[in-house]
Image (cartoon, rainbow, N blue to C red; front, side, top):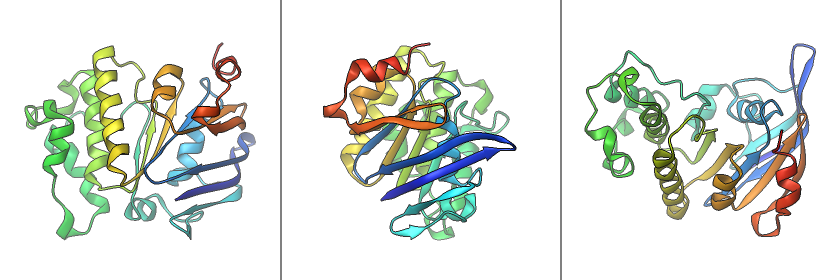
Length: 231
């Protein structure tokens, strides 16, 4: 479904991605692993259109989206849960969820009950401000907001960062359910090895802006991958 080929991305004179390629398939979880600062978020930003690329091609569902805007990609079913969550702290939970409507035609603008089946805590907090939620609850809200868009690809950037273990387990379970439903490709950006290994179908390890190891999870050389994650 997603093919990113030979991507170069720069921030000014600094090269963040160098000849990076990645594939993500519907019904599977593709994990991008690596330490902080190696280009994982830059790759997510390239896929979602938040930063233009210097070279390469990105295709989605057989269409070239390389020069499309963030909004155009969202309308094509690409949803992004950014690192740090970036929920609207002064808006209520319900209002935060409704911001996901922006990418949908008016007839499809509804919050499915499935959202609250996945995140029951949010149903009890609909009228509370986002800023009043715990960090783990805000992460659940950020994922739920993306799911309101009814995406066909979901990109999750460091969903376990700064989250308590009980919420990490809940997020693990939600991602597992989404994969089992088989309706979307899931790209998981992560540096927490065990979390990623237990979820991923395929993986790509990044270092210094390049993919250094990639493959199917069943063929992973765990020791080699861990060597790129240790400081």
